[in-house]
Image (cartoon, rainbow, N blue to C red):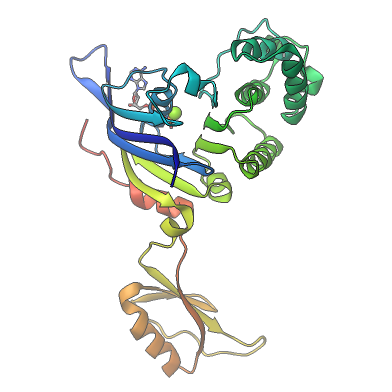
Length: 308
Ligand SMILES: Nc1ncnc2c1ncn2[C@@H]1O[C@H](COP(=O)(O)OP(=O)(O)OP(=O)(O)O)[C@@H](O)[C@H]1O
Ligand SMILES: [Mg+2]
């Protein structure tokens, strides 16, 4: 598998002004983003997501570790020109208008005037800022500034797009638009790395995720595979409509609803025997897929507690 990003043993500590000790933000982080994936970077507040993305962009220097981006060591300016980046807190000169801001970034990226013009119109339309294209950014709302940041990140048609919490400040419609936009870019071959707390959104659009906690990668892989890796099984019962079926036999080993029973892997045999003995018909037995939220909570609970 080809990786657009490969991070090995990344360490970073920050000085804490009022204390001698340094705060460990990253403690040997590994991360691999395969080409063509939509990759979700998840983790509690302070886990080290933004620090990781800034290091990848060459904005923060790590204390130790290797970063290989688009085949190059340490994010060269050449590699950076092929990456689109939406920072967690985009900073813009507020006297500029969207059109002038994009022209400025376009020139920095070495784009010619005609391409800047057509890309700007296309992108401002796509992020819903066409009407505000010539309005100074100081008159923008929080969500409008976020849309501006998204347009900026896409300007030079990057092959690798890195977004630090892209849906911050967006209204529900804006979130849907961004999701559709990312799906379209993914279909077109762009690799996308998203840091986010919106787990349902990540579950919907990402094919791979990594969960980081206290500066370490605590779980990563294909989303389907991770969410199926639980210890719980689901037994689906066949219940003809209208039938007054026998109640589920009570048991400490399983949790039952009308037509399904959840049971630990080791109790599947017992549960099946019990259900069949009650005259119930079993339609299907399968590993239960967790929600991303359940998976997240199971992996980050307790991580990093007691250490500093
Ligand atoms: N410039 C800085 N100076 C000092 N400490 C910092 C700095 N930037 C980050 N940190 C610390 O590093 C740790 C990781 O922060 P980071 O911003 O990477 O987390 P995050 O996972 O992006 O969190 P969030 O979900 O809240 O955005 C935190 O403990 C934070 O306080
Ligand atoms: Mg962050």
